[in-house]
Length: 309
Image 1: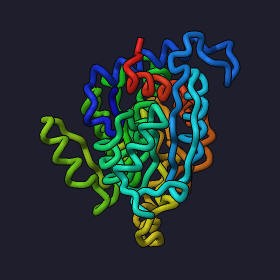
Image 2: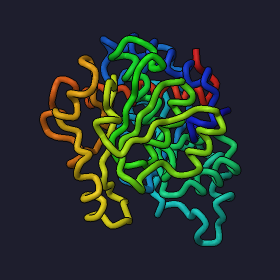
Image 3: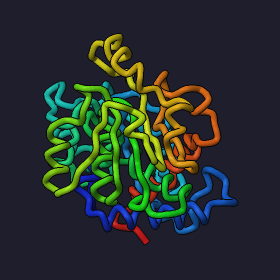
């Protein structure tokens, strides 16, 4: 049994095994309908319990499909439907109940501590579907998409992030260490990655490049990543943040400084951080990116259950 909580805690060789398995499984599904199970049904008889404390479209749908294709079943519960420390039941007791009824627990949460507490008390695997500091399933799938499209290891590419320093970027930074790729970050002053992320990068004797000029960050990039600048759960001064990022829009002028065959990726939902012509243009691969969540998440689940081929 293995957990999938943060990319920085998973050996690079295991992350690569997940991507190799995902590629094999995707290739075998080219003529199979969405809800038809994989022939080997590797998780037949398993019940995976999902809980979403935050809104979700792609993660919820892609994991539902992934679980079905692996031959398992899933149930989604709401935070308000469980005790979770209320009504006299501790989180530890809730974890024991989940471990009794289910075979795996998938959690999208507003609390890193909650994921940590669950991981200490569950006797079944836990998968981080998103937390304030990490979005590992998204970013591992993004690495898969980059290598699929560019047809070369990501270690041989220049990767750029333009936008807010959030949980997706934290995971992308972790991926840059695990997969050894160059990462440029374009963001305004006071929006740099948090200290604990920078300290971890230094501990691994690596560097990331931070620019306050978005064109400098994007120069000669093979891939440009972004995310919504103001998220649904953003508690800061939203108007100030929009003003701070007004010169960081990803438009055709910015994409001109990237390499000729560069691509644009966005974890979605989108906002005003990307122009319509880029988002809907030939360089944008966001729909392929979203679809690949299914294939990589299947292999993440198999990793957790020790069933990678």
